[in-house]
Every structure is written in C-alpha cells, then in structure tokens.
Length: 75
Image (tube, rainbow, N blue to C red; front, side, top):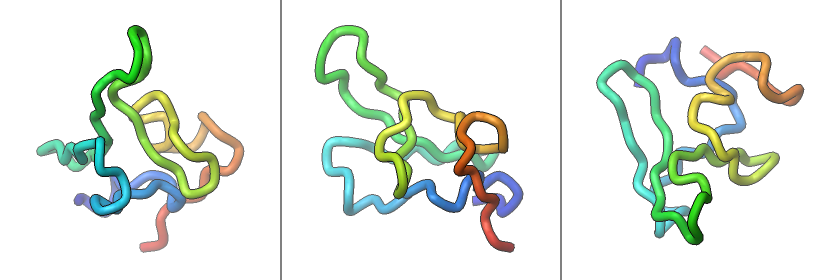
C-alpha cells in the first residue's frame, strides 16, 4: 500500500479476521472491504476499525474529519 494513503492507524486490514469479507486493494493505494449485504440496503463497501468496529462507508477514515478518534499511521 502507498504509505501516504494508509489512513487512520486503527483501521484493520487483517485478512484472517473477516471471513465473509474480501479486502480490496485498489491500484491507487486505497484499501477497503467488500461484503455481501446481510439484508437489503446494508453497507457492502466498509472499513473495520479496531476501536469502533465496522464503519459503513469506505474512505471515511482515510483522512481526518470523519471521526474524532482519527490518528494518522506512523511513518
């Protein structure tokens, strides 16, 4: 992953943890999870946070502003 696009340090990209989800690694360096909708209208592109659990919008924690707990990745 491009180091400048890692986002919040609390995002979880452990592929062994979310069996029903697929980690998507885009060519431009952004990562998120895709999952089948457990019910109509539920989020299918998500992030997983070690502090908050599932975040229902990919990209919400790639930069400051969405959640007050955001902390940048250590370089």
